[in-house]
Length: 71
Image (cartoon, rainbow, N blue to C red; front, side, top):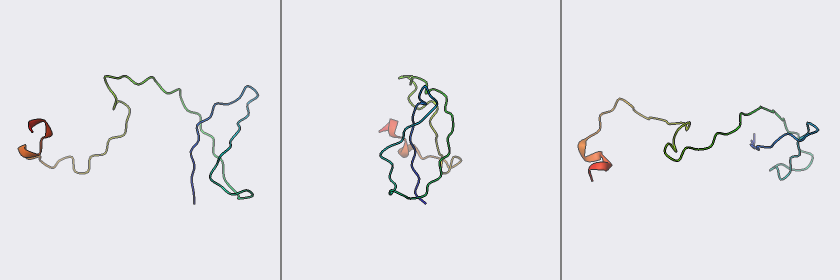
């Protein structure tokens, strides 16, 4: 199954216009519409705030030679 994400604003008449989708003409698709809160202005001092962070092994110890700040 292919997926495509598009962010659009609802028009004054409550409609949406989607074009340039990566699907063939006549292909059956499912449309799910979710409301999104307005994106907050990024704080230049905190560029990672609100970003997803994944720790592969958060409890693993780090050797002193592995710290980039010490190099």
